[in-house]
Length: 223
Image 1 (cartoon, rainbow, N blue to C red):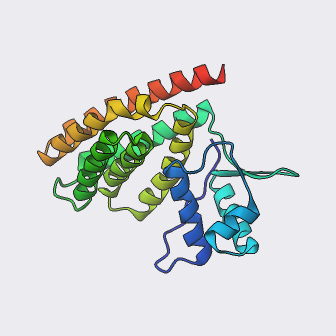
Image 2 (image 1 turned 90 degrees about the vertical axis):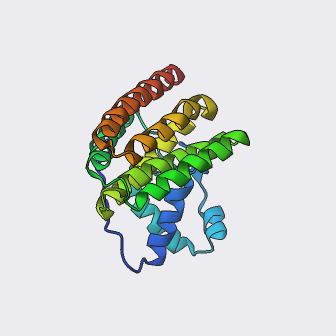
């Protein structure tokens, strides 16, 4: 997995920081897909920024391992490898399980988790499975927020963007996200009841299951 730089979250972000975060969110929400080539002209117009500013944003995201520059071909969204996916889940287990095990059940991030579960159900009922995926990312971002660490949250934002790129290669968001909606609700229930250690153990099993499923489908796609 590419070595990454996780910048501190500035109190007053610059234009490049703001635009970089906008593009990260496009990745997390599935609006940009793995392997997609990015047009400077189109993106600079959409984001209402100069090409020089966009190039600086590209440099930031290339350094984070989310974009890739190839001479004479320009900038494209990275395609995660199987090794990347294994590493992503290793990081997720380290961050998320620890955050859940050690948090106070009435932590403010608890509300973010509740909202994400509700948003996922509403999106499922409307058949919007990509939005279910976005709500799932928001749920796990809420878990990381339990740790009260800007650095961990910034790291997870990058990991979530990479993970969503891997999800996007599977082309079946319902198959991918449906099994985990009610598992998220169950995790939230355990956590709300103060069973934080059990919630963390349950989350570890959940992440192991998710990893196996993503790797199996991903391997078949590569073949």
